[in-house]
Image (cartoon, protein in one colour):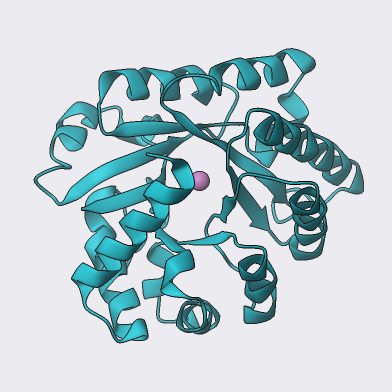
Length: 257
Ligand code: NI
């Protein structure tokens, strides 16, 4: 069944029908979902979803957008919550220079990114990386950590070139592929998907964001993943069933589920 490695069902966008929607996942062919913390406030909400739904696991961490809101206490909470039975990764963590242009902000993001990579290493968990307009700094930090020994990871919503993809793939990391691959103007990402071995691709939605064509711009959910699956199948010349099967195995292996 479909394995969505990256969704945000704690988001307000699901307040009106969260339960009904999540209860329809199995019938829609979606077997497993990782709810990924993005904000400081999202930590408790993610734990709540993990405890309520057997098929929901959690990634614990704080997004670079919230780096300036983080304290030592936040890091302690991330570490403590990452020891939950159903916590399978540290994320989403990383760098976002698209929304944050100031050098000072970049330094704070880097500090919190490193602090959470330390937690991933110490707690023996894979990481989930958000990186936007920060290709070089992200690659340098990930490379440095991988040299020191890590437990694998996913580059979520991969948005860079094939050359950068190759660097991550050579380190044994996975690329998270979602709705963007279905966009008409996603030539660069389609090239990356053609190039990457199927064994290093995982499916993701980033729900409620990044809905695939034909729902682009609308609220996304894991139920839309068949559109992403079909695009990947076409690019790789394999069947949709094979895409679902291989990406599920990849996710289970990385996340130890
Ligand atoms: Ni996300």
